[in-house]
Length: 367
Ligand SMILES: *Cc1c(COP(=O)(O)O)cnc(C)c1O
Image 1: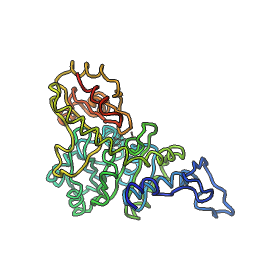
Image 2: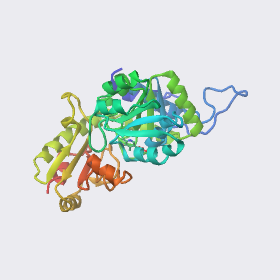
Image 3: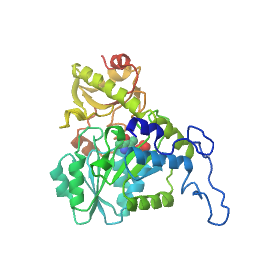
Image 4: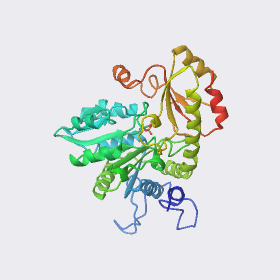
């Protein structure tokens, strides 16, 4: 099945018991056993729930992996993946990651003895040089957040294979519609499904997909042991959101192209960050994220007052256009000197271009 069909019919399509065309919400914590240990595949909903299972099979199909896992948030997914490692292990992270990922590494996993280095993952030499005898994994986002740096996943996968490391890719910005990291050599792909996959700013969820049974068994063990699972209602809502992913992404891409052209013509915009300015591959499409710098704080304040379509909020990937100032919002948890080094200035804005009418969106971005 092609991707556009898979989003609708992938995973577990409908309900074989009733003929319902959508997966039912199995709002249950436990399941009858006909004799001790004899059941129909489900014992307890932390371990497995049919609605969640339908979603987990769906993300595995979309990422072309063998197994999928659904968590209560993107951070729960990331944290559960990091629990694959042991005290004393070292992990190399991209230096321009989601702020919450920075926070969980530096203020939670560090306390459990996980060592980390942050490097510009778009620079392959830097990544190679960061490998130590106790390095176990490389964790990247591409394009990165919010500076939109592009890392070549296949090249990083080669480096990680040579040193026997796991390659973990946060694919939130691209989604499997635009990029399939497992096919490029990654071992684990994960998502904040809160963003494009859900697509409607109505839920918080995380998804993981892998293509090796040994990894799948370990992740299932962690998911069941730690318990950061996604509930059946949100699993259902996420399945519904994913059905329109390609339709939404096409409009996000179209609108973002128009926004970039428009911003390029504005005298008060001093810099535009979009992956297309950093990628070697002209045919590659990117999602609806664009960051730009305005010339001063006064311009930023004037712009914010104009917004009718853009909602001033954290998050991204919904049908509605959202805009934020990363230094004060999404990346406030990142130390100020690190922010400066990365170029996250106080006048940098990050837009998640929605699917509204482009004329209305451009009006908001005209002073
Ligand atoms: C939002 C986000 C996360 C965290 O996901 P939550 O669902 O908010 O927990 C992780 N990575 C990226 C790239 C994100 O945008």
